Length: 201
Ligand SMILES: C[S@@+](CC[C@H](N)C(=O)[O-])C[C@H]1O[C@@H](n2cnc3c(N)ncnc32)[C@H](O)[C@@H]1O
Image (cartoon, rainbow, N blue to C red):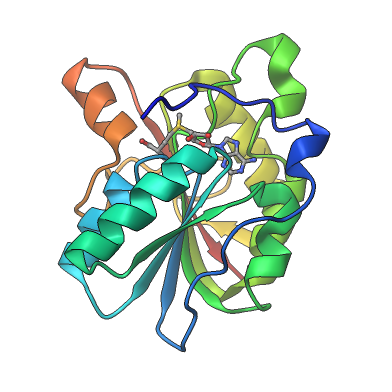
């Protein structure tokens, strides 16, 4: 299947929610925003199958692929076709998410594409509303500008506490024992990875 590399999230096409809601049934929920192939979530599901792993993804083809695979291997993983900033509040009840991962967010790292960045105050607001108190929000990227923007967004929001100390990167590696596809590639090619770990107050 051909999967487009990039989509422009500012298109009107993405405004209306047309995704399929995940089977929320009281299990603790972990969410990856911009999950693509959801490698990270499938590996989390192997590590702990008692939870539900929801990927939010703006490329519909990825959601179809992920949900097909989840069904085939009976994994508790579900991808939702959506625009995360616009639709998180429709998908999740307030305070219902246990943990959020933002792994290598969006490829729009050039200055002229700044308005298309995935991590922005709107997304932080959606996350702050949807997660429970004490929930972890983990962000990692190999793009310096995106790392700085993400830090400015979360450190600048009083609802989040930086687990590494104010305005500091998390230097103890990925604490979850699984890797996303981009993370695996960045490590294989020796790219630096900037990580941040926040907790919801
Ligand atoms: C660079 S990929 C990283 C994929 C995966 N997290 C990984 O680390 O391998 C970023 C993903 O975020 C998705 N994305 C970008 N903006 C989004 C948005 N507003 N809502 C949901 N997904 C988005 C893109 O379609 C893409 O699949």
